[in-house]
Image: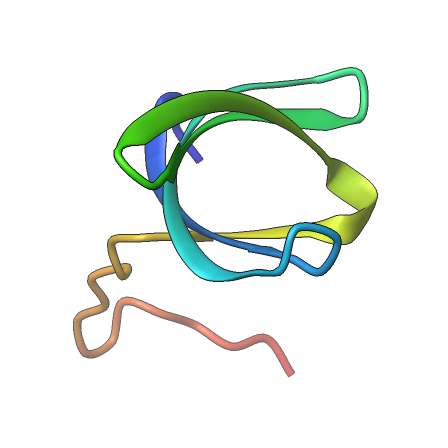
Length: 70
């Protein structure tokens, strides 16, 4: 994942389920993200152990470009 990157954020502690945000940095066991609350954007530190980040843009996969090792 490139930094900065637009992501969907899942974090049970904050009740985030697919909230849009921007990853600014990954360090010391935390994701540093910009997250929108109401009309304001806040810098938030989310623990890596209890946070899921999904890249907002799907991967482009063309036929034959993915190999599965069996």
